[in-house]
Image (cartoon, rainbow, N blue to C red; front, side, top):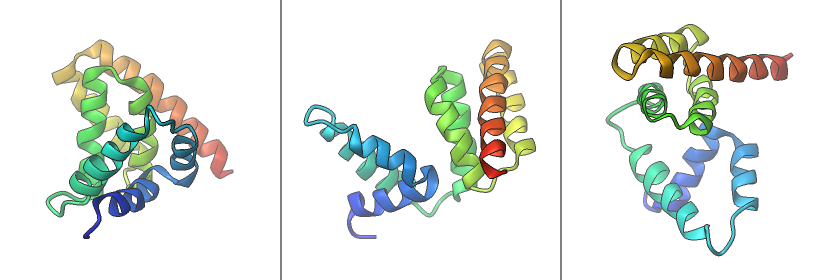
Length: 127
């Protein structure tokens, strides 16, 4: 991996899917372009590209962080990504349950509702 932006775009597409990345790219403006480049190069091309954790483990960490911070849009996006990265619905539920202890029951309660909707949507798309 020599080009953090190109590597990041590849990983971002693999984890989030082409439709999501295409929408983000289409919505990019001169004002938001530097931010999109930052997250693609740094988050995806540097951190997600590191060999120290597999993508399943990274998904667990991201789900917990997004739940803890109440970033529900990002949480929903990463529930989808967790499925892509091989987590089962039961494992996603376990992450939320574990988070209830450290992040609070109200956050986990909302996390379950958000995750259930995402998982239901994914199941419907697969039919």
